[in-house]
Length: 474
Image (cartoon, rainbow, N blue to C red; front, side, top):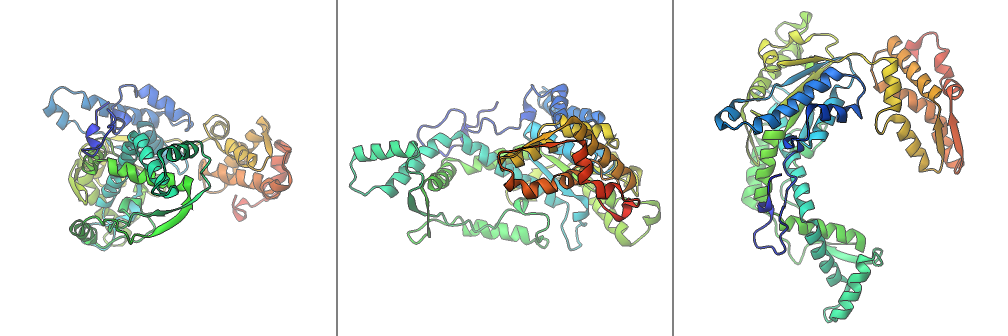
């Protein structure tokens, strides 16, 4: 692990020896072998071994590149970007998301249909890199704060004591109150805390939802420059105060104190490095911008799709994106593109784009047996989630093996008769099975409710007797 003690603001006391020791993603850890990564993915994803192996090898290659002795050679080695294609609900997004979580890498998921080419009103592909940087900065800051959490909490506690005690309080009174504070005896006391003024910069682009408005081209850079010129707003005696419990105040003040202890310039540089070296960008719905035979004409959605594909070429090949935190190179980021390709095929993508996605993996449709395993073998599966939800009401749910098998069977039948939405069908079937129990759960506290085959069929009877399932969407 690297020593990131420079992330502490110079001049602080009791500096921990390894501040930001976990800033670097775990992908640099030699322990993440391909077999280890696949085993981790197996806990959450059933089947799709070919996709898991490809992702695990890509992750391991990052570690291998870092350990190449020749720096010139290390610079030349670039990731093999991956194209996942398979039916919806087969696990494409989950594979990428779990991979990033396993590696503790900065991760951003986006849809190809969001973007347009440069020069046309809309969101350009550079936005996804800016979002990745924002995610990296947020995660890096939180990890750095964890390194100084103890020192920050001590400082926050002293500030809380200042709010609770009078100016002429004796040291013994302060010591006694500090002991009560640590024991939790003062958690419900109310205090008025001076809030730090908000930063002039609005919510970062990467923290906004995809459905929120996108700034016009050039506006983000303008806002960033204005923010830098205005500089950070300093607190004053006129800063607003908010009344809250001591417990809330301790948490709020500890977070502020942790921020004061950090050297944010060093945090930013560590975050930019994490984004460049460990970042994973998942571009979903790539098939929606591919040309099918009938669409390969000028105009229409294909015009936009072709333009977006051309814009993606530079990012996947390796370029420099200007963000408000500084320039970021995409040369060593791992791009994972995915699509169902129901109405098109991977070969409909621009040849140049296909060449920048050298690893192509086909995900298989999920079967009834896969559904059974998803419900019973994966961590935090749907059955376990339903049991946990009802435990909050004091109700004990007991699913029989037959009930789980029946749910899987009905989901598979619905997928074969209706639109095949893969594993997502399980959630819909499960919600119908649990609907009545959840509605009446508050009246069943302290009881145990068995879920067997008969109960499952009874709850779905109206659906099962439909001869035309197309009229009844599960």
